[in-house]
Image: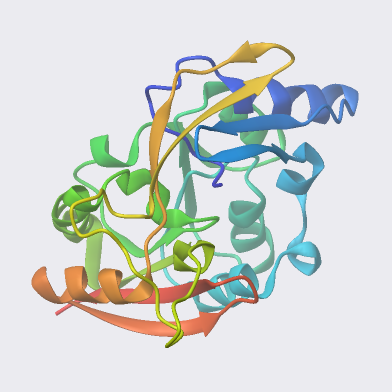
Length: 245
């Protein structure tokens, strides 16, 4: 579950939770609801973690980031703050949560904007950063071409996208040969629906995409991007780097 959510989630759940923790140290968790899984929690203090507390995939991405940075779905701004303050890079943080961006600014982020990734235009970045299941904002497999083509307009020459996700095929029971059977007529198994809630206020449902690496690489090839697997995580997650050819 990533910090940026669909624009369909009209209640600013993340903004309220992030603000309450920043100003009052209120650790009430964000609840994540899905028709396919039991309810889960996002622990709000985790959104304020420093570099040492980040998982290896995130650390690897931040170490690889260079040039002018776009941090997509910045949440409380932890990734941007590291890049801005520790690596001394020019970093732009964007999120659709107005409340989260107010806290980003309060924490010292110089360029924090309330805008959807797909509405950003007429700018160029050397690194686009999409972490904490960065493929989520694509929403559906059918939107992959749109994602690649829009991203190409935002990348400077020799630019890169650092993106992570998880392969949810591990949720399926293997057959005798160790493989899994997936209904070819069913929607892609990584296309999920979620809603989130905080202190009794609940968002509308929104689509969220978990994408296996092979599907990402195939879509990249079809859109004239290279795709390289940089690092595997411990929970079927991975970090990839995408570059336009």
